[in-house]
Image 1 (spheres, helix red, strand yellow):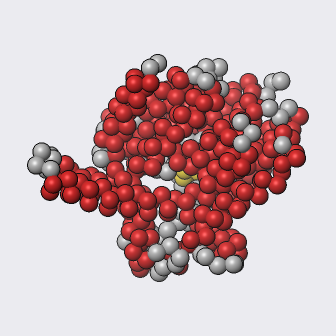
Image 2: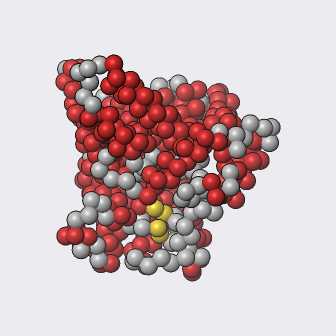
Image 3: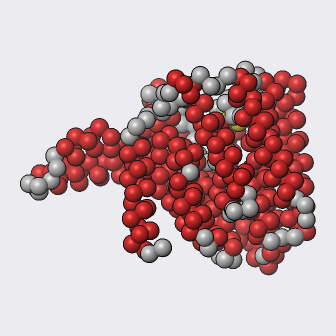
Length: 400
């Protein structure tokens, strides 16, 4: 495909996502906008220590990387507003309606823009890793993924972009860049934490003489958090922030609207994850699967096995971990993309299941005919499909 054609298609897809960003405003966006204003007004050094009365909705419960993204979006919106008004005053031919449009939609576009751009960054990484441009186009065209980023505005694509580019650099033996990008992913949100043990096994087996560069992962995390607590006790403060503030904020249910094993067991009921020792059973299943995958990777440490093992593990975490949200299946899709076209039935069905699960969370756009489908039997059926897909992937990828 010619470069000009590629650029044109990318622009069309970008404009579509920007338009999509203006069509919804989930409650999470109110938090993101509120936190960005707070970071700009009060600064970063005491951001997490501000009293809860400061916040219009809820206190910040996201890591520093996410807060920095929201702050950058806030600053971008201010800059764009000033630029549009300046052009409107100085250029007679400037469309004045654009000023009004940006005042109405600019803030929402800006807060979703990092997630939208991250979609393209992931697609580029997939093309680099597979040498197949159609995989990048397939990723950009996947409705489940642009629903998550462009329509909803979640940051899962940003976290994934850092992680996938970490794998790109790892495949090229660019270890400093790889570890820094992985650290940046974890500092933005810990949703790619399951990658770390498999990444570490592969790293130890392939780059035994350069293990010292692994220290860049925690150092990057500390560097991202440093503006929020510029003191020598940063590691201690960071541990307390996660254990006392960020992690306790998670809903303590077996499943938080995720169509997984626990949803299949309990349906749409919010069952505490302390019931029947569920909070012990789930981790035990995940640790067992991790052990199997880690052992296989240790025996044969090649990059394709790292990718396939990571896809299986992320799927397992979504299905068996408690307190799971619907959107946390996101890491599966860039990893599955690297296994195409062999895994195309799984990719297709998992994408449909994921989109179905995302829509269940807030029914937007509201289509009564679709909402009426979401009976307990239907959502349990989708959960069963996810379990079946996992069983197929696990079996097919662990035969050798």
